[in-house]
Length: 371
Image (cartoon, rainbow, N blue to C red; front, side, top):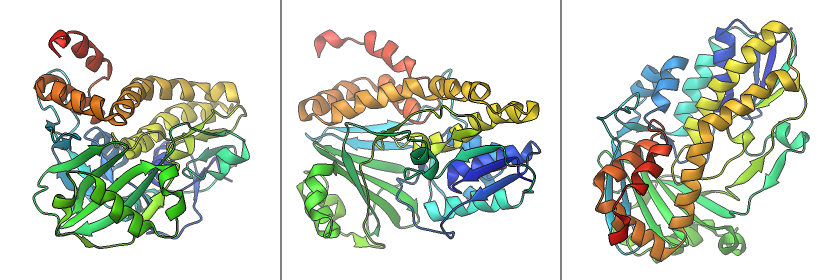
Protein backbone atom coordinates (compact mmCIF):
# COMPACT_ATOMS: atom_id res chain seq x y z
CA UNK A 1 0.00 0.00 0.00
CA UNK A 2 1.02 3.59 -0.62
CA UNK A 3 1.27 6.43 1.90
CA UNK A 4 1.77 9.26 -0.62
CA UNK A 5 0.97 9.64 -4.31
CA UNK A 6 2.90 12.46 -5.99
CA UNK A 7 1.45 13.53 -9.34
CA UNK A 8 4.19 15.07 -11.48
CA UNK A 9 7.87 14.09 -11.52
CA UNK A 10 9.33 17.53 -12.18
CA UNK A 11 11.48 19.35 -9.61
CA UNK A 12 8.72 19.90 -7.04
CA UNK A 13 7.33 16.39 -7.35
CA UNK A 14 10.67 14.60 -7.32
CA UNK A 15 11.87 16.73 -4.39
CA UNK A 16 8.70 16.01 -2.40
CA UNK A 17 9.04 12.29 -3.15
CA UNK A 18 12.68 12.27 -2.01
CA UNK A 19 12.01 14.13 1.22
CA UNK A 20 9.00 12.02 2.19
CA UNK A 21 10.66 8.73 1.24
CA UNK A 22 13.69 9.66 3.36
CA UNK A 23 11.31 10.01 6.32
CA UNK A 24 10.18 6.42 5.82
CA UNK A 25 6.95 6.93 3.86
CA UNK A 26 6.31 4.86 0.76
CA UNK A 27 5.77 7.12 -2.24
CA UNK A 28 4.44 6.55 -5.74
CA UNK A 29 5.66 9.17 -8.20
CA UNK A 30 3.52 9.53 -11.33
CA UNK A 31 4.12 11.45 -14.56
CA UNK A 32 2.51 11.15 -17.97
CA UNK A 33 5.77 12.07 -19.75
CA UNK A 34 8.76 9.91 -20.54
CA UNK A 35 12.00 11.38 -19.23
CA UNK A 36 14.09 13.18 -20.34
CA UNK A 37 11.56 15.55 -21.91
CA UNK A 38 11.81 19.17 -23.09
CA UNK A 39 10.44 21.77 -20.67
CA UNK A 40 9.86 25.49 -21.10
CA UNK A 41 11.89 27.13 -18.37
CA UNK A 42 14.40 29.90 -17.72
CA UNK A 43 16.69 27.12 -16.41
CA UNK A 44 18.00 29.23 -13.53
CA UNK A 45 18.67 28.07 -9.96
CA UNK A 46 19.26 30.82 -7.40
CA UNK A 47 22.21 30.68 -4.95
CA UNK A 48 19.87 29.54 -2.17
CA UNK A 49 18.49 26.71 -4.32
CA UNK A 50 21.87 25.03 -3.80
CA UNK A 51 20.96 24.49 -0.13
CA UNK A 52 17.84 22.53 -1.04
CA UNK A 53 19.68 20.57 -3.73
CA UNK A 54 22.32 19.62 -1.18
CA UNK A 55 19.56 18.56 1.23
CA UNK A 56 18.13 16.39 -1.55
CA UNK A 57 21.53 14.82 -2.24
CA UNK A 58 21.77 16.03 -5.86
CA UNK A 59 24.05 19.09 -5.73
CA UNK A 60 27.23 17.17 -6.59
CA UNK A 61 25.47 15.51 -9.51
CA UNK A 62 24.19 18.89 -10.76
CA UNK A 63 27.74 20.28 -10.62
CA UNK A 64 29.14 17.21 -12.36
CA UNK A 65 26.52 17.52 -15.11
CA UNK A 66 28.02 20.85 -16.19
CA UNK A 67 25.76 23.40 -14.47
CA UNK A 68 27.04 26.89 -15.29
CA UNK A 69 27.88 29.17 -12.34
CA UNK A 70 26.40 32.68 -12.51
CA UNK A 71 27.76 35.32 -10.14
CA UNK A 72 25.15 37.89 -11.14
CA UNK A 73 22.99 39.49 -13.80
CA UNK A 74 23.67 42.33 -16.22
CA UNK A 75 20.47 44.35 -16.75
CA UNK A 76 20.09 46.85 -19.60
CA UNK A 77 17.34 49.48 -19.30
CA UNK A 78 15.48 50.91 -22.32
CA UNK A 79 17.78 53.96 -22.43
CA UNK A 80 20.92 51.82 -22.34
CA UNK A 81 21.70 52.23 -18.64
CA UNK A 82 23.51 49.05 -17.57
CA UNK A 83 23.33 47.53 -14.09
CA UNK A 84 26.02 44.95 -13.37
CA UNK A 85 24.43 43.15 -10.44
CA UNK A 86 26.48 40.69 -8.38
CA UNK A 87 25.16 38.40 -5.67
CA UNK A 88 26.47 39.79 -2.36
CA UNK A 89 29.22 37.72 -0.78
CA UNK A 90 29.72 39.67 2.44
CA UNK A 91 27.57 41.13 5.19
CA UNK A 92 25.01 39.47 7.46
CA UNK A 93 23.25 37.58 4.67
CA UNK A 94 25.06 34.99 2.58
CA UNK A 95 23.75 32.57 0.03
CA UNK A 96 24.40 28.87 0.46
CA UNK A 97 26.77 29.48 -2.43
CA UNK A 98 28.15 32.73 -3.83
CA UNK A 99 26.71 32.04 -7.25
CA UNK A 100 23.58 30.84 -9.00
CA UNK A 101 23.48 27.92 -11.44
CA UNK A 102 22.06 27.49 -14.91
CA UNK A 103 21.38 24.02 -16.26
CA UNK A 104 19.19 22.44 -18.91
CA UNK A 105 15.89 21.24 -17.52
CA UNK A 106 16.18 17.83 -19.16
CA UNK A 107 19.42 17.29 -17.24
CA UNK A 108 18.19 18.72 -13.93
CA UNK A 109 14.91 16.81 -13.99
CA UNK A 110 16.72 13.56 -14.82
CA UNK A 111 19.08 13.98 -11.86
CA UNK A 112 16.20 14.57 -9.43
CA UNK A 113 14.15 11.71 -10.83
CA UNK A 114 17.07 9.27 -10.62
CA UNK A 115 17.58 10.27 -6.99
CA UNK A 116 13.88 9.66 -6.27
CA UNK A 117 13.96 6.30 -8.06
CA UNK A 118 16.83 5.18 -5.82
CA UNK A 119 14.46 5.31 -2.81
CA UNK A 120 11.79 2.71 -1.90
CA UNK A 121 8.19 3.07 -3.06
CA UNK A 122 5.15 1.17 -1.66
CA UNK A 123 2.25 1.18 1.29
CA UNK A 124 -1.40 3.00 1.78
CA UNK A 125 -3.02 5.68 -0.42
CA UNK A 126 -3.73 8.59 1.96
CA UNK A 127 -2.05 11.75 0.77
CA UNK A 128 -1.95 13.08 -2.80
CA UNK A 129 0.65 15.71 -3.74
CA UNK A 130 -0.20 17.68 -6.88
CA UNK A 131 3.13 18.67 -8.41
CA UNK A 132 2.05 18.32 -12.03
CA UNK A 133 2.81 21.86 -13.19
CA UNK A 134 0.73 24.64 -14.65
CA UNK A 135 -1.75 22.21 -16.25
CA UNK A 136 -2.16 20.38 -12.93
CA UNK A 137 -4.84 17.69 -13.11
CA UNK A 138 -5.11 17.83 -9.33
CA UNK A 139 -5.60 21.62 -9.09
CA UNK A 140 -8.04 21.71 -12.02
CA UNK A 141 -10.04 18.76 -10.69
CA UNK A 142 -10.54 20.67 -7.43
CA UNK A 143 -11.52 23.87 -9.28
CA UNK A 144 -8.65 25.86 -7.75
CA UNK A 145 -7.14 27.52 -10.85
CA UNK A 146 -7.96 31.18 -11.54
CA UNK A 147 -6.74 33.56 -14.28
CA UNK A 148 -4.35 36.41 -13.46
CA UNK A 149 -4.64 39.92 -14.87
CA UNK A 150 -0.94 39.85 -15.91
CA UNK A 151 -1.36 38.23 -19.34
CA UNK A 152 2.05 37.52 -20.85
CA UNK A 153 3.62 34.90 -23.11
CA UNK A 154 7.15 33.51 -22.86
CA UNK A 155 9.06 32.35 -25.95
CA UNK A 156 12.20 30.31 -25.27
CA UNK A 157 14.89 28.83 -27.51
CA UNK A 158 18.33 27.30 -27.00
CA UNK A 159 20.89 29.11 -29.18
CA UNK A 160 24.66 29.26 -29.72
CA UNK A 161 27.04 31.88 -31.08
CA UNK A 162 26.52 34.48 -28.34
CA UNK A 163 29.89 35.40 -26.93
CA UNK A 164 31.01 37.24 -23.81
CA UNK A 165 28.37 36.16 -21.30
CA UNK A 166 30.99 34.83 -18.90
CA UNK A 167 29.50 34.33 -15.44
CA UNK A 168 26.58 36.68 -16.01
CA UNK A 169 23.08 36.30 -17.32
CA UNK A 170 21.80 39.32 -19.24
CA UNK A 171 18.39 40.99 -19.08
CA UNK A 172 17.19 43.55 -21.64
CA UNK A 173 14.16 45.60 -20.65
CA UNK A 174 12.28 47.41 -23.43
CA UNK A 175 8.57 47.79 -22.51
CA UNK A 176 6.27 46.10 -23.12
CA UNK A 177 8.79 43.29 -23.67
CA UNK A 178 11.93 41.98 -22.01
CA UNK A 179 14.49 39.39 -23.03
CA UNK A 180 16.85 37.23 -20.96
CA UNK A 181 20.06 35.48 -22.01
CA UNK A 182 21.07 32.68 -19.65
CA UNK A 183 24.14 30.46 -20.34
CA UNK A 184 23.03 26.91 -19.50
CA UNK A 185 25.87 24.82 -20.94
CA UNK A 186 29.21 25.51 -22.66
CA UNK A 187 28.34 27.48 -25.78
CA UNK A 188 24.57 27.11 -25.24
CA UNK A 189 22.34 29.99 -24.15
CA UNK A 190 18.70 29.95 -23.04
CA UNK A 191 17.21 32.88 -24.97
CA UNK A 192 13.82 33.97 -23.66
CA UNK A 193 11.45 36.72 -24.73
CA UNK A 194 8.42 37.78 -22.69
CA UNK A 195 5.67 39.73 -24.48
CA UNK A 196 2.02 40.64 -23.89
CA UNK A 197 -0.08 37.60 -24.73
CA UNK A 198 -2.47 39.65 -26.88
CA UNK A 199 0.40 40.72 -29.16
CA UNK A 200 1.33 37.12 -29.96
CA UNK A 201 -2.07 35.44 -30.37
CA UNK A 202 -2.44 35.95 -34.12
CA UNK A 203 1.08 34.57 -34.70
CA UNK A 204 0.50 31.24 -32.96
CA UNK A 205 1.39 29.32 -36.14
CA UNK A 206 4.48 31.48 -36.81
CA UNK A 207 6.16 31.74 -33.43
CA UNK A 208 9.73 31.63 -34.75
CA UNK A 209 9.03 34.49 -37.16
CA UNK A 210 7.25 36.46 -34.44
CA UNK A 211 10.08 35.94 -31.95
CA UNK A 212 12.74 37.05 -34.43
CA UNK A 213 10.80 40.17 -35.41
CA UNK A 214 10.06 41.08 -31.81
CA UNK A 215 13.69 40.67 -30.72
CA UNK A 216 14.75 43.04 -33.51
CA UNK A 217 12.46 45.67 -31.99
CA UNK A 218 14.30 45.62 -28.66
CA UNK A 219 16.79 48.45 -29.02
CA UNK A 220 19.85 46.85 -27.42
CA UNK A 221 19.29 43.20 -28.37
CA UNK A 222 19.90 42.79 -32.15
CA UNK A 223 23.63 43.60 -31.99
CA UNK A 224 23.99 41.14 -29.09
CA UNK A 225 22.44 38.35 -31.17
CA UNK A 226 24.36 39.02 -34.38
CA UNK A 227 26.17 35.67 -34.41
CA UNK A 228 23.29 33.62 -33.01
CA UNK A 229 22.47 30.14 -34.30
CA UNK A 230 19.37 28.18 -33.28
CA UNK A 231 20.09 24.95 -31.38
CA UNK A 232 16.49 23.91 -30.80
CA UNK A 233 12.90 24.85 -31.59
CA UNK A 234 11.07 27.91 -30.29
CA UNK A 235 8.80 26.89 -27.42
CA UNK A 236 5.97 29.02 -26.04
CA UNK A 237 4.13 29.18 -22.73
CA UNK A 238 1.28 31.48 -21.80
CA UNK A 239 -0.44 33.00 -20.11
CA UNK A 240 2.49 32.92 -17.70
CA UNK A 241 0.73 34.10 -14.55
CA UNK A 242 -2.19 32.28 -12.93
CA UNK A 243 -3.56 31.89 -9.42
CA UNK A 244 -4.31 28.65 -7.60
CA UNK A 245 -6.29 28.50 -4.37
CA UNK A 246 -5.42 26.26 -1.46
CA UNK A 247 -7.21 22.86 -1.38
CA UNK A 248 -10.17 22.90 0.99
CA UNK A 249 -10.29 19.12 1.23
CA UNK A 250 -8.11 16.77 3.23
CA UNK A 251 -5.49 14.49 1.73
CA UNK A 252 -4.27 16.92 -0.96
CA UNK A 253 -1.31 19.32 -1.14
CA UNK A 254 0.03 21.30 -4.12
CA UNK A 255 3.68 22.15 -4.82
CA UNK A 256 5.65 23.99 -7.50
CA UNK A 257 3.82 25.43 -10.51
CA UNK A 258 0.72 23.40 -9.63
CA UNK A 259 0.27 25.88 -6.76
CA UNK A 260 0.40 28.96 -9.03
CA UNK A 261 2.92 31.06 -10.95
CA UNK A 262 3.57 34.76 -11.35
CA UNK A 263 6.87 36.20 -12.48
CA UNK A 264 9.74 34.85 -14.62
CA UNK A 265 11.76 38.10 -14.40
CA UNK A 266 13.37 37.20 -11.09
CA UNK A 267 13.75 33.53 -12.06
CA UNK A 268 12.39 32.07 -8.85
CA UNK A 269 10.43 29.18 -10.38
CA UNK A 270 12.85 26.32 -9.72
CA UNK A 271 13.79 27.55 -6.24
CA UNK A 272 10.10 27.89 -5.36
CA UNK A 273 9.48 24.34 -6.59
CA UNK A 274 12.28 22.92 -4.45
CA UNK A 275 11.51 25.03 -1.37
CA UNK A 276 7.77 24.34 -1.54
CA UNK A 277 8.53 20.59 -1.62
CA UNK A 278 10.71 21.05 1.46
CA UNK A 279 7.93 22.92 3.31
CA UNK A 280 5.39 20.32 2.19
CA UNK A 281 7.44 17.46 3.60
CA UNK A 282 7.78 19.27 6.94
CA UNK A 283 3.97 19.42 7.25
CA UNK A 284 3.10 16.11 5.60
CA UNK A 285 5.41 14.02 7.78
CA UNK A 286 3.73 14.78 11.14
CA UNK A 287 0.29 14.59 9.52
CA UNK A 288 1.02 11.12 8.15
CA UNK A 289 2.57 10.08 11.46
CA UNK A 290 -0.65 10.83 13.34
CA UNK A 291 -2.89 9.44 10.60
CA UNK A 292 -4.61 12.84 10.26
CA UNK A 293 -4.36 14.34 6.77
CA UNK A 294 -7.47 16.49 7.12
CA UNK A 295 -7.55 20.01 5.70
CA UNK A 296 -6.94 21.37 9.20
CA UNK A 297 -3.91 19.19 9.80
CA UNK A 298 -2.40 20.25 6.46
CA UNK A 299 -3.22 23.97 6.88
CA UNK A 300 0.25 24.85 8.27
CA UNK A 301 1.64 24.24 4.78
CA UNK A 302 -0.26 27.24 3.35
CA UNK A 303 0.94 29.40 6.23
CA UNK A 304 4.53 28.25 5.73
CA UNK A 305 4.37 29.11 2.02
CA UNK A 306 3.04 32.59 2.76
CA UNK A 307 5.84 33.17 5.25
CA UNK A 308 8.45 31.92 2.77
CA UNK A 309 7.26 33.58 -0.43
CA UNK A 310 4.89 36.50 0.26
CA UNK A 311 7.55 39.17 0.78
CA UNK A 312 9.42 38.28 -2.38
CA UNK A 313 6.13 38.24 -4.27
CA UNK A 314 5.66 41.90 -3.29
CA UNK A 315 9.13 42.72 -4.64
CA UNK A 316 8.47 40.90 -7.91
CA UNK A 317 5.11 42.66 -8.35
CA UNK A 318 6.87 45.99 -7.89
CA UNK A 319 9.55 44.99 -10.42
CA UNK A 320 6.93 43.88 -12.94
CA UNK A 321 5.17 47.24 -12.61
CA UNK A 322 8.45 49.11 -13.11
CA UNK A 323 9.65 47.15 -16.14
CA UNK A 324 6.26 47.58 -17.83
CA UNK A 325 6.76 51.38 -18.00
CA UNK A 326 9.66 52.87 -19.95
CA UNK A 327 10.21 55.99 -17.84
CA UNK A 328 10.00 54.02 -14.60
CA UNK A 329 12.41 51.38 -15.90
CA UNK A 330 14.96 54.02 -16.95
CA UNK A 331 14.57 55.95 -13.70
CA UNK A 332 14.90 52.82 -11.56
CA UNK A 333 18.04 51.74 -13.44
CA UNK A 334 19.69 55.14 -12.92
CA UNK A 335 18.61 55.14 -9.27
CA UNK A 336 20.19 51.72 -8.67
CA UNK A 337 23.30 52.55 -10.69
CA UNK A 338 24.10 55.31 -8.17
CA UNK A 339 23.45 53.00 -5.21
CA UNK A 340 25.56 49.83 -5.57
CA UNK A 341 24.72 48.70 -2.03
CA UNK A 342 21.00 48.75 -2.83
CA UNK A 343 21.61 46.90 -6.11
CA UNK A 344 23.61 44.28 -4.20
CA UNK A 345 20.74 43.82 -1.75
CA UNK A 346 18.28 43.44 -4.63
CA UNK A 347 20.50 40.76 -6.15
CA UNK A 348 20.49 38.95 -2.81
CA UNK A 349 16.69 39.11 -2.73
CA UNK A 350 16.52 37.76 -6.29
CA UNK A 351 19.00 35.09 -5.20
CA UNK A 352 16.58 34.03 -2.43
CA UNK A 353 18.97 34.52 0.49
CA UNK A 354 18.48 38.17 1.54
CA UNK A 355 15.13 38.89 3.27
CA UNK A 356 13.02 41.07 0.91
CA UNK A 357 12.20 43.49 3.74
CA UNK A 358 15.84 44.68 3.57
CA UNK A 359 15.04 46.25 0.19
CA UNK A 360 12.30 48.50 1.55
CA UNK A 361 14.45 49.62 4.46
CA UNK A 362 17.30 50.65 2.17
CA UNK A 363 14.98 52.41 -0.27
CA UNK A 364 13.40 54.44 2.52
CA UNK A 365 16.83 55.49 3.79
CA UNK A 366 18.18 56.35 0.32
CA UNK A 367 18.60 59.95 -0.73
CA UNK A 368 15.45 59.80 -2.88
CA UNK A 369 14.92 63.55 -2.84
CA UNK A 370 17.70 64.21 -5.33
CA UNK A 371 16.17 61.81 -7.84
